[in-house]
Image 1 (tube, rainbow, N blue to C red):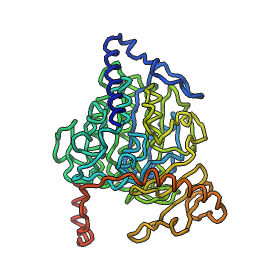
Image 2: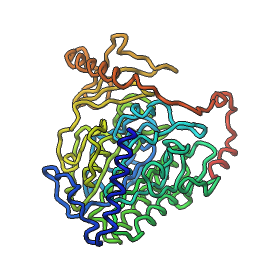
Image 3: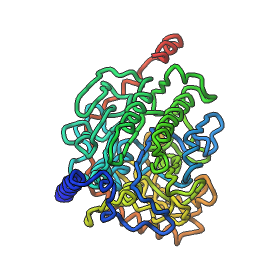
Image 4: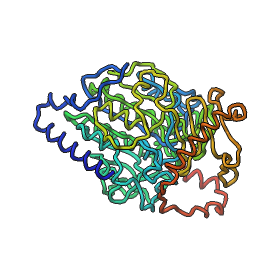
Length: 476
């Protein structure tokens, strides 16, 4: 992987040198590096700007476009209305760190050793500098790259955003329920005690500033908000704004600030040639709705992984497109790279597939199967129609039911994963078992990194909170 990374670096240097020697008009012409647009795509004369909004712990059913009853998300819905909504899109993991690793590398997180647990405040591990990120790939074709929000892929030297392809980083190194929580700019701490209610606005302000910077180069903005992950801390202007209490307030606050991003793009006259993508890192945690899906964050049922997805690019994606093709966040790496005209190393192992056709209404998934990992092990396998679950939670245990000959095969056309149809489709079970064995041998043998995990056993001996103290804490 180190050789691939060095090659990408040389490509970036070569591209930027050529950019400096050419005129502004020539600077936007990278046709020699562009791949042939897929059939059905509208050809654009310019590479798009890219804004990738990645929210934290938002459930499939927490946005209006997916049927939310108590939360209103008109700006998020407008992205789907102006472009495409995917109804069978999944996070690549059921918790934060591995999902982010999958998104930014196009590979299952286990390949990077990040499939188990998450990065903690005291962790010493993270995304290796040898891994190739989406930001690094986009820089090879002249993109300015910025991240504003939660990184959560390691905060030691060599793992940080500005060491992984991003020109600018303003945000927090991990989840905002971890302490200490510094606000970072690049590799420097600029605030040792950041205000939690200010985070969504702060990240949005920085993204808008990045958009408004005059440049002949297109930009890639990665906007991984900390919300609606616990603790739920909306700003005062958004308290009691929804019918879903604090959780709904935080989601509607997110929607408001996403609207500010869209407004800025429109005011600058670049909305039509900006690809805006919205999705979540996994399903809902303590609060939130998975809609009609079974399961939540940390589990292996569909609701832990299937998340909202909307994307717009008026110059290319037809408005009002809806697809139920089976897709995953690992697909965004090759899709965005190809749209930008970047050439990927031929020996780079990717698990993601280009889903540009899906953006244009193609109903067939580019995947025969998708794997769903839980703590570095395969918790489920999915085809277009069936979902094969290999374990179930019981008390504090993960029971590998498949190893006991109990096969849980769900027909996704029946909706919620309630009744196994394994007895009636043993041929499908056989195929799933073959996929399981193959993936187990290839991927589950890769060592996974865990460090700095805090001891939280003290929580179980805490006294019941005083109601008045709780009210005071909620206001902070």
